Length: 496
Image (cartoon, rainbow, N blue to C red; front, side, top):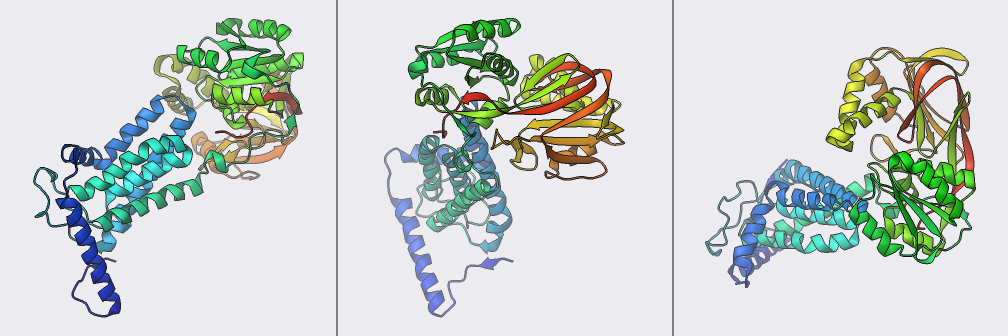
């Protein structure tokens, strides 16, 4: 349903509307006829750069390139908010009110856009996109939002300055954009809305400037920028860089002289650090340095500043640890362990990641594993022999960030989040159904439950088991259980 603006109608309401429209035109003329020093060459270019959201996509790419987890989240939230605002404007806003564009008589020719827009004037799509991106970024990071906001405001102003929109078009578009950003936050909460990471609190020493910490850094994660940041934030810590092959040996040496054992790397590296810390009954300090960093993110440690704050404040929690065993083989996991398709996916991902990078390797490996059509794993589960495409056991309950399980808010809940995908035809469909299904669901193709432990019997020799991004061979009976509150880990009480 659309409506044309009618300035000839009568009545009190229409009189008030005509007065508003008159004020709107006067405000437009005041901006159009006013000379703003330096604005004539700048604002038209800025307005054109925002066509189709190109300016904001570039800003999002710049934020993502910083490698800061918070900046990356801000970029994703900003673009998601922009997409929702743009979709709303083009499907609802532009079709609701058919308002002609302003007359350009009062706008100097040098300010006018080379290509005048042909869509209706109300509301301003550029203003909606600018406000949505800036608000989305600000909801995730106020400092970054303060940087983006002036640019967004300038884009909105440029739409009046170039004669493309009336002021009310811009204000309405901005309102759409802000509303879209808050709608996205309602669906996917920001970090400050989430529960405080980890519980319960643990008594640990406060290490000012990192004194008493021995931090072992996997060389694959030890970039020059990261090492410089570690030196600045933890000047009294002992930092040891090592090759991946010598990681466990260096962690054992560090544990012998450390008051607190630290480890920097991806989930596999942090798993090795946790194993040594458990063996020596030491508190653990983790610093993310891999591609995914699930445990550090769920814990609330994003960077060296957050870790430094936790060490200085003596802020730590006790977390559960998962343990698997098969015969003489025993291992631990902080995130999850699995049998079936996922270990094959991990092996394929590792094979491709050195060539094309982590995220592309994940996509390629998933497609290759599903296309290969491997036979399902045959094992006894719950006393019944059955084919399994996947058995996933998460260390703690995974909650949703969108359609799939992605985060844990409680790292000491005493439960394994188990998802089983039964064998049969169409493995890709079965795996997708398990991914999007809610917790505690059961069907003929998959099941999800929360238990304290489980046992899988009759696993065939040569079967791969994945744990925290690493893989190992298992056979026979595989037991997976929880060690409640077994590990003490430093973490900031709240991200800042």
